[in-house]
Image 1 (cartoon, rainbow, N blue to C red):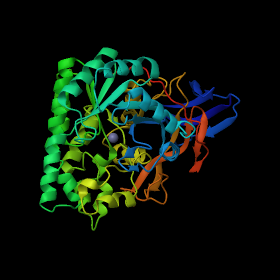
Image 2: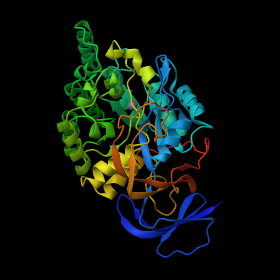
Image 3: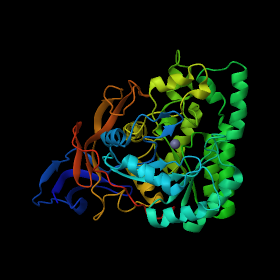
Length: 461
Ligand SMILES: [Zn+2]
C-alpha cells in the first residue's frame, strides 16, 4: 500500500485545531505528530493550509428517477463533482418503485453506484409503503446490509407520501431495530389543495411553487413528525429544514430532551424566495421542495447552525437540466423539483459561515463531516482525522478564491444556482482512503474506486 506524508498543515477536526503532520498508510491515518520525518511515496506540503476531514454529504439523489426523467448526475459524475468540492463520502437515497421490496431497491442502487462512484458511499432507504413485512425488511437492512436509516415523506401526495399511520408504524419499526428515521416534513395534503387552487386561478409561473408550499405547511409537518416520534421513543432526523417556524419545533423538542435532529442545506442559507422572481422562466432553476424562504428564515437557520439546534449541512443534490425544467414552462407543478449543490456545499459554508464569522472552523467540520458521520453510523472511520480513521482528507486553502460558475464546476447540469458568486476558501488537494483524487484542480480519481459503506447503527447523541 502506498504511503503519504502531509506536512506542515493545521489539522482541524470538530474538536481540535493544531499544527501537525499526518502519515498515511494502508489508506488510513497511521500517525499524527509534529516534525514527522518518515519516508513516504507521496509527500504533500500543506504549509499555510488547513487539513480537514473529507466532507460527508448525507443527502444526495444521484441517478434518481423522477417520472420520465432522471436526475442529471449519476454516481460517476456526481461523486467526481463532490470530490472537487471537498466531499469524500455521500449517503444517497435508494428509493423503491411502488410495490418493490426494500431489499430489491437496495440492489438497484448498489448497481447504479458500482463501477462508477469515485468516493465512498452509503444508502438511506426511502420507504413509500409500510406493509406487514416492512418492519422485518427494515430490521434485515439494518442488521445485515449496513442501511441503518429510513426516510419517509409527509409530502408528494399520491407519489411518495405516507399517511400518519404508516409513518407511525415505520417509527415503531425503526425503534425496534435501532434505525434512524428521516422525514421530509411538509404537509402534502395542504400543498395539493393550494397547488390546485393556484392553477385554477391561472397562476402557473415558478413563483407559485413557493407560494403554494408555505412555511406553515413545513412547520406543521415537522411538529407532527416530532410528536409521533416522541410517542414511540424513536429518534428523528428532519431533512432539508428550511424555515424559522420548523426550526422552532426542533429547538423546542431538543430543549425537552427528545432525540430530534435536523439538517439544512446551503440553498436555504444563501438563496431566497426572491430568486423565483427572476426574469422569464429563470425561477424554475430554484424550484425545489421545500422552496426557498425569506431573509428572516436564513438568519434563523444561521443561528441554529451556530447554537447547535441544527446539526448537519447536507445538499439535497438533485439536479435537472434546463431542458427538463422546461416541462413546467406553463405549469409550475410540472417543474422537476431539485437543484445542483454537491460540489459547492463546503465552499459556500466556509465563505458565508466561517469567513463571515458565523461559525468557527471546528463547527464547520462538525456540520460537514463529524455530525453526519456519527448520526449515520460512519464514525470514527469517517468524519475525523484520528489514528485509524480512513485517510479521507482535504487540504483546504482558506484564501483560495473561486467564482462559482457552470463553466468551472463539474456537476453534469447546465446551470448553477450561484452563477457568478465569488467565494473564498476551497480544497486544493483531496484524498480518499489515501489516494489523491483531486490535485490543484486536476482530476486524479477514477470511477469505481469508491466503496459501498456498510453503516453501523446511528449514534444519535
Ligand atoms: Zn431529497
